[in-house]
Amino acid sequence: LFQQFQHSIQDIKEILKDDLALIDIHLKNIVLNQDGLISQVVENIFSGGGKRIRPILHILTGKLLQSEPTSLDESFYYLAAAIELIHCATLLHDDVIDKSDLRRGKKTANYLFDNKTAILVGDFLFAESFKLMVKTNNNKALNVLATTSSLISQGEVRQLELQQKDFITKDQYYNVIEAKTAILFAASTELSAYVSAENQCHAAILKDFGLNLGLAFQIIDDILDYNSASNLLGKEIGDDFFEQKITLPIILLEKKLDSQERLYLKQLFDKKYQPNNKDLLEITKLLNKYDIFNQSFSYAERHVNSALEILNSFAKNEARDILESICRIIIARKY
Ligand code: IPE
Ligand code: IPE
Ligand code: MG
Ligand code: MG
Ligand code: MG
Image (cartoon, rainbow, N blue to C red):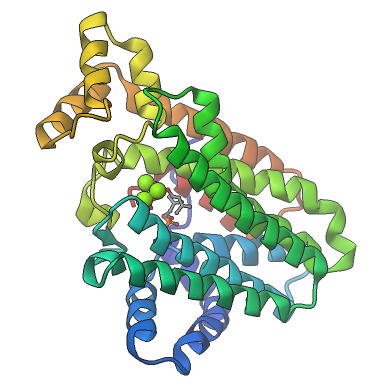
């Protein structure tokens, strides 16, 4: 499975540069008539770039459904921009909730300004995303994105609620990551089926494709939170740990520990305790000792394999090849 994939994210952005430019026009329009704080904060998050993986998935699944390469309906660009805006809005909010200082290699809005500013500008981006999606006049698409927005919030609240618990199960973890992350990936791919009437029959399978990619994406994100470098990732390492957030690596680790180590683990995640850098080092040692990164990785791999299988049921074209590369990138990514 893990032979060298053909395209990097940079290659894909290059191949899709005309499509991404059309999306960028919609994004740039948002700040065109804004000044002061709104434009500063939005500029800050936009100029960090980001991988743009969700809009890319929307455009590519649109192209996957074409029998010959022609230009996509303009609805794709409205929806791709709306999806990226929902994503950016949740990032602004997420960094407040997670008290994160670094995002896309830059200081976050909550760090540079304050929490109030980040939350209000996040709300502004949410509202702007709805302005874009209504331009498609497509009720099915509106329904998907409205439901998606609701589920993302439910996922974040559920996560907050679970943080009061001493420990969580794998099912509870999956519940959260499906809602907070995978559903937006699923929307990005499912929506492509709703843009043209003759493709609606592909909606369920494309949704499943995106859902699997999104689950894998968040599992890898949770591994990288322990096992990357902030200059690569553009985010601080250990944000989850210092917030005592229980993610898949910790759930799998807990099962492997001897009784003394387990006691230590419970202590680190005790709400009355504030973990420090030395604790992060210790926990990373344990994660390596019990081979947890590889074990977590194989969960992500399973979802990517399901996604690849779905992809194989579509006729081969250039978009399918690039989507296959994205499946592999999601697993191999370091940022
Ligand atoms: C970060 O998403 C939030 C998660 C769901 C893990 P990305 O890793 O796609 O963030 P950008 O857009 O590339 O910065
Ligand atoms: C991402 O989860 C959830 C969102 C929907 C924003 P994280 O909190 O792990 O995302 P990062 O690591 O801050 O990007
Ligand atoms: Mg978070
Ligand atoms: Mg976060
Ligand atoms: Mg994370």
